[in-house]
Image: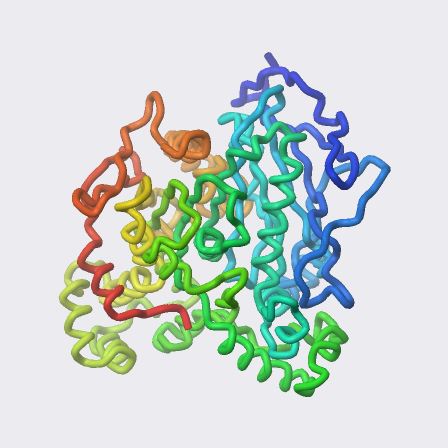
Length: 528
């Protein structure tokens, strides 16, 4: 045995530096410090989508005869948050259009292991697989799974549709480039992961927020058929898409803002610099005014229902039975909306009169009465919390309920809510959107999560992290999260409606959000 303070590691049965042969050439990795895993970082899975390949589906990566040393993460894909603070971030990591890389963590032992394919969130506009809480070494080493994470094109580079871009495409599609990147990475895994001791016939896709949207879109996409065998949706829904024609109309307007004519728009858009492309208005929701609900629910960068990669809205595919039928684990956090108000000092002190005015203006008086009945002001610490919880349900939590309800009578479904809130600011964050992620990866001590958890708080939270790692890995192994030493997690069905409440202690109870979610389902509210 090798002993490191707080960590026990079994001596590796394989050399992480030993080259692994892929379809494109040999790759060598490194030992992941503090884990019983090897890591291979920054492996290209597609050709750089630059120059003439901008706004086109991904092409295969170039082959190489020399050993590719995969010892560091690839560049972050271009994104406005990073560009806007470039001087701050440039010393920490590179940003580039040439960003289509993936990372692999595998147990440092021989065998064939289930594969867990992670898709990061960020509204389809921000994020990277290199973020600290997504590091897969501990999950891979402790649970003997192969963890894969990916970068994919974001924002305008990944999701801009335009009539001319559709016309030049053999499938008459545009605006799904980031999603096609995800599918290309999943195809690369299918074809190459056996060389890294991964089982290509046992792949679980999982993701949070926009990564959850992507997982559900893969459930609905014919292009993903046969590439995965289980799916996990974390705080992401199945209706964050828009018709292609709507996306094309928006793309034409954006092209005009860049002074690109309708024809030849494609060549003009490909000639623009990164800075020019990012000068376009940020289209994802910005929480600079919590009382402008129309703007708050606006996410311009969404997948397009193009009749090819995505035949229709994913939730419709799930309800009709026309989807990739695999076991599903799905859920949300208790306090989905709270974290989006942190940057708004004083907003939580808003009086009931103002809150009612905003809700009436946005939804109408009859709907306001129903919302107040479902979310009584007296049930919350502050009046605004009632509105925050209502919006969190409408935009995120109840979208997960909709997915569970859509397939529960025909497939194994495991439904959860994450309630653990013992962090540095439970009154501000609570069990916040995305805060369950480091529990799955056991990365509570990593940036960015160490702003929520001190070493002492991380140690207290570790038992829940250990349980969640096992639940997620068991599900990846067998399509069932249950295993020795774990509280039994029953299937969700429309009769019993039970779900797991992930907390310390954990509990299984009848879900308490049915009336709320059925109400929001009737309203048909989606991200614009």
